[in-house]
Length: 282
Image (tube, rainbow, N blue to C red; front, side, top):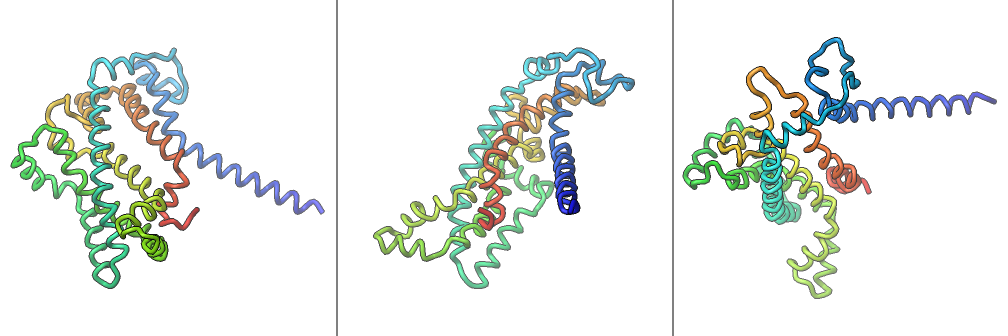
């Protein structure tokens, strides 16, 4: 008689332990960045201290170094400008391309889609040399526009592939009904298909912006002035000097950059998952 309640309690306890372990695993990097940001240098380098707690009083010195001894604020602005520009270009190119491939039937449509996706798999270490030649010919060295020009080379292929799969889940009957009501194909696409595709579009926006924030090779190659750096290049360049690591300031920069991204992912997680699973999860 008591077997079933005991098993339920045991199952709930097991679920809770698994969930707690997963949450701890995911949240630990943020906790580590947070506690390191406010630790003083002596507390960090003393191996006798507990690394998970404050052994000395917290300090704001690491944040002072980050904001006043480096151009971190400028790097944040540069990253946002480049990110928004690349997201806009990616949407302009990937949305019609993904829709066209989704409606293109036959082998050629599938082969063309695979070919576009394969361009995403080419590593930056292979492409940055020819891109350097192009940037030099256009006179865009040491300019944020060089990054805006190059970054869509890896955001557009993957986002096109992603949107193609999402557009395939939208029945053609919806567009045909809208066209019968008087809309052109162009109007049916923007007034009917695009609103339905918002989870996929949101996925593209988050994915493209995240890639821009973490990209390092192109930004290091094309930008030489510190005032034009993005966060991914400026932070390690100025806070890693030989074998000296400014761990507190490094963790502070990582925390400041990662929190907005984490919040966006959490606020829109349902639509983000729906976009990546091609609309299968509502």
